Length: 345
Ligand SMILES: Nc1ncnc2c1ncn2[C@@H]1O[C@H](COP(=O)(O)OP(=O)(O)OP(=O)(O)O)[C@@H](O)[C@H]1O
Ligand SMILES: [Mg+2]
Image (cartoon, rainbow, N blue to C red; front, side, top):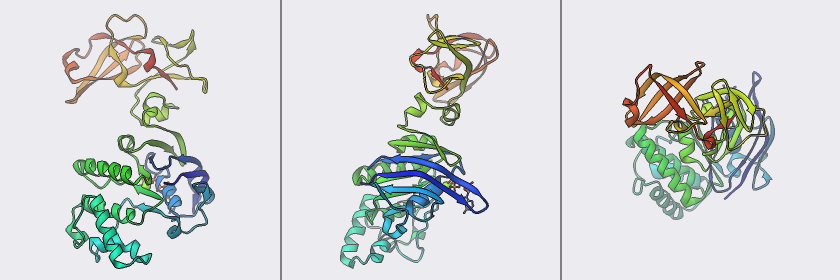
């Protein structure tokens, strides 16, 4: 197990492209951390610098408190599995997986045993003699994972490990990564642009925008306590109601809302309510929003309503599939949000 720390890391590519800017990050030892963010935010660049495949312009990377930036990729023991995992086509599975061990000079018999063990771990026991061309996409992905794991890396770096797979294989691979990581306890960093994937795979998520970390924490925090509107939106938050703090709560054009928590770290500009945290009001008289139905969508397992509040503020609600026939477009109703589900940004 290895603790990875990143201090004021910068990467400026030629042409003055600042891909990573003063990045600070502490990654949990022996856990899975997801580096999440939109395309081009610097995820792969960060991963390559951790692996030692790209030299930082400035800043430091530490493994267990020791700087590794001057240590070559081979000696760093941080193994990266690329977005387009390239296997050697002229080598069979066993040779592909054993490549790193052969380079390290491990004797053949020992190598063979280790390869068999690791193939078993990724559920490809007995596949040694197959060529990459004789494998499915999901199997190739697992061989690439086995090839990385076989050298007992200190840090496992996975760049979009599920992106080349269809939905079914994606579920399988996701489960496999979780199982393998739990068995080996290798400190793992997974890069993804998909928030759902990050939440399912990672113990901790670091959300990046434009080369910097916007927020880091347990997956749940990004839903309950997003630091900014931008973070909330990235995680599917859709309702933002402008207003200001007043009387221990938040005053908006569509009413006063009681809150469980008042943030002191910012001057809040808006109340945010996740679409799944709204309910149809029953007998509540506070924290209610009178609305008109403007649209609705039945999505099989849930229903999404679009409303307009009295001043026109759009409000979105995700509710049970069985609520689909409850209201028609143009009808009026009242929504409720519990104080514990109100958050300010
Ligand atoms: N070799 C390079 N030279 C110049 N600019 C580069 C180079 N590699 C990446 N960039 C730029 O640096 C920024 C970050 O790129 P990076 O590949 O790290 O993004 P990413 O977050 O991995 O994106 P994606 O999700 O699309 O893979 C982008 O603006 C990209 O165009
Ligand atoms: Mg990338």
